[in-house]
Length: 557
Image 1 (cartoon, one colour):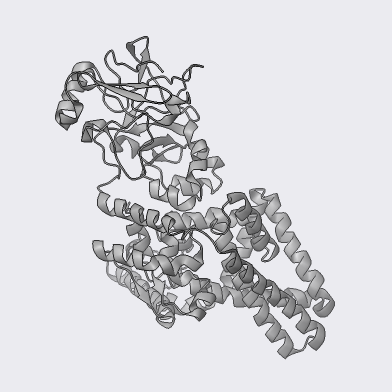
Image 2: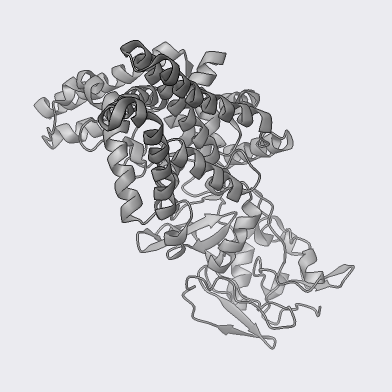
């Protein structure tokens, strides 16, 4: 490949910046080595612009690389000298794009359209020498519904149109607009390298040299240490699932389904038999709920496609729900836990007020949809008994139809066909419906107490743009470990570890826990853990506290 010499000059370094590290020439005087893809003739993305006064010219051959230094050593220049030399050379401010044509520069207007990321070079394999730099101030303006940019490993992407095609739903990716989404990207994808092929056409530029990798004054050292912790967990194979664990887990669910049928077949439909049968089916449904959660988070198989297939089977055929509905809702919760208008789990439809700020806002505005000072009492009548059999049931069916999730609908129908074929011969149509409703009623209590004990007593507020570790720790807490707690909660007693590493198989949470606690202690981040009983009590106590705040604001502010 010929010299990529600069006339003005534009020096181009071809290299993938390692995750969490910055190798920007104007900051450290470091120009990364030539990527092997250059030597093989493959196209690579330009990484930075270097002015004439401090340009290193790179030459790549099939087996070697040579660096020629032009003028002063760039590594000795300060930030200010870079800016002054850039000004003398005509290099524009962040947001401008340059094109190298026959050794001359040419300003080129470009809006960075969706799907037109980095323009490729000709058949020779040499890319066009162009790139755009952006400041955080500019990026943060693009966080609108019709205009979404985000940053991953210092690369800037325009995801405005792609958001509608995002497999995890357009809302979860929209919640990260205008921010550094590197940790969220790593957390949700089991093969980030594969996903990069979808991002490549969306690339519109990079963070400007001198811009920090994290937005809004986040603690860069904390972020770096967390990414190091994640790399350590990967090296410990903590993201590798145990086939035996999940096979046995699925087996014990199927065994309960068979046991329920055998009971009614041999002992009839008496009240005692039906009550025991209901408890067995409730346990089966609750445990199937925890298992579908594992496949939904891609934490079982190495290939996403296999996780998706089994996820549809478990949540669809074993539970009668929708995988896509769950994905689109649950991933928002993980991306922005306990954040109003972003986490659907804290959207209480004016039935409850949560946290410390929402009750005061409602009180000041004299909003009284319900007597919120009694919400800790009517909680027992509304939330646990009605969430699954009423609210979720209506939402799931309507979502599958409105959004045309026909595959999910087919899986859900297979569940109801299997259920009614099994129990109509014993209970009839009406009796089978009553049995199913009662099972959903019991399961709803189990689900609500387990899922809310980790979140409702924690901080619930508007967006504060924290780093990944801090935001997850503020919204989650753990429950003490025991064999029963692990089984009863589906290992959601390790809610902290699960939120930090959603794709980690749950049987490995206890192994990464000491590393997380150590990191939190280093930076003074609260790591909260409590007994199971206290966690249940804290739900009611938190609701009472929020209700009292509302009443005080309603009467006196």
